[in-house]
Image (cartoon, rainbow, N blue to C red; front, side, top):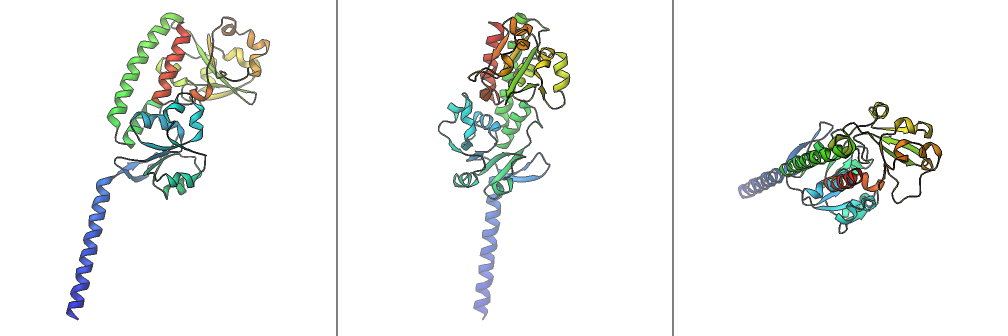
Length: 299
């Protein structure tokens, strides 16, 4: 009987030791991270397999050296990011099962994603609220997530230095007070975009510090974008106009006389770009947008 009790005690001690060792190993491999909601979760200190459901952040993570094992198929719509992720597994939106098969140790999603709870059962999951941080702070935050904060801050510094030089060159060419509008159309509806809703706004209005027409600045201030009627286009048009019409059939609003009589149109100051490439604001996409817009403005 005494031998049996001693055996039980020994087994208990061994199990406790293994448990403590397991907890210690887990503590060494993970760290606490605070989500946009204020909640804290454990994430890998150095993620090895990242699945990005919210494609907005895929380029930024890859630029920092993150090993992206999967992204949604929409990434291929960007002619910049398509090449960067040509060897990365693609999955359809809401394909939770395929994400699980990739065995990620970190998953990045939007806060509006309906499958967050399912992803949380697969791996540590970080929901990001789009627009809560500006594009530069977002890149720094991505660096914090994967242990690359120093590299992300270095990119921000280099970006600011480069775009400051670009801004001076552009203003010397078009003037300090020249204004620019960004328009896009969906299903025959026209939208104007401000400084932080993609479509090049981060580059034009923030990095280059170029101006919007006053009327446009007022209407996009709240939401970052504004639906417009064709009749209102002249009121919101700047000295230069950027439209998301490259590679598409000419939008209806560009076929009428209202459009044709806008000064920027008559002066050939319209820049047509590819919407799907301009959706993104990661370092790869931003540098492409920077070069393209600068080229068109100073040529």
